[in-house]
Length: 461
Image (cartoon, rainbow, N blue to C red; front, top):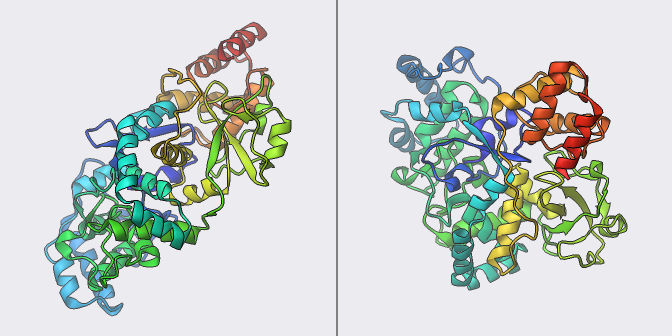
C-alpha cells in the first residue's frame, strides 16, 4: 500500500527523516508497498457520500447507510458501462470491513529513524534475494531495459520493496476494501473513483473477481498499482491478451517499467550517490523538502564546495544537476541525488523510500554497503515532536499549529532555530535537540544559554 493512502500526506509529514509504522505483525514489505499514484485531496462526491458516513474509531460502519450508498454507487456504475455480471460478482452481498477502516485510521505507535528503516528495507536477505532475481530474470529484464530504458536492477528494487518480490501482494478483496473506504468518507472522491476503475479491470477480463486481491487501500499486484494507475500504465508484456500483474512477473515488471518511462525516467543517468562532506560545510545547502529539489547545483559546483565521493575520490565530471540530502542530519550519510531520484518520488513521495530503492538497486547489482557509520539515535515520539513544534512556534520560527509530524515546514523552522543558536543547522531533530528545546521552552530563553548551546553543538559534531 502506498503510504500516502494512510493519510500521512494530508499533513506536512513526508517521512524524509523518519518512517512511521505501526508496531504490528504486518511485514515491512507490506507497510511500504506502493501504489504509484498519489491520492486526490479529500472531497465529497454525490449526495450519498457525506461527512456523517465517517465511522468513529472502534465503531462498526453503519450497515444500513452503507447499503444505501452501495445502491447509489451501483446505479452510477451501471450508467458508466460496468456490466451487470461484474456488478453482481463484485458488489452483491458485500459489507464494509471494519479492519480496513481501522488501518486507514490507525495512528502510528512510534517513529522509526532512517537508519532503522534502511536496515529493514535494504536487508542482507532482501539484497541476496534481489541479486538472485536479477540473474533469474536476466533475459526479461534486458528486454525491458531495451524497450523502456529502465535498468533491470531498478525494476527488481521496486519489486522487492513493494511486495518482497511478489510474495506479499495483499489479501484484501479489493472491491470490498475500496467500497469501505469510499463509503467511509475521509477520501470518498479518490476511493470512489478507484472502485470504478477496479470494476473496469474486472469487466475487461484482466482478472477474475476471486483473484482481485490487494492491500487494504486497494493497491494491486506485484507492483502495487492502484486501479487507476493500472488502467493508465499497466501493459500486457506477455502478449496473452490480458494484463495479469498478480501472477505474471512479466506483466508486473513490464508495467513497472512502462510507468517509470512515462514518469520520465532518464536511461542515461543513475539515481544518485553517497558522498562525503567537508568539515564546516554549509548545512543550509541541504534539501529539506519532500521533493528533493532545493538548492540544485551541477556536480562541479558541489565539488568546488569540497564534496567528494563517499570514498574520498573526486565527483564524476558529468553535466548533471543534483540536490544534497541528509536523511539523518549532519552525523548520518549524505547523498547527492539526480532527476531519476525525483522520478522515484513520483512513485512514492518519501525520501526514505526513494533512497531505499536507489540503494537496493545498487546493492543487488554488486555495490558495497554505505560508507557512513550507522548511528544509534532513538526515535522521537509524537508527543516529543509536538513539544518541539510548540517551542519553535513559541519563539517565532514556526507558524503552523503543532501536529506531531516532522515535515519540511517543521524542519525548515528547526534549521532557522539551530542557526540562531549557533548549532549545526541541518534541520534534523534528535533526542538532544528535543532536550535542548525543552530547556529553552521552560526558561523562556530561545537558546537557553550560550553554554548549553555550545555543549549541544559539540555533542552533535
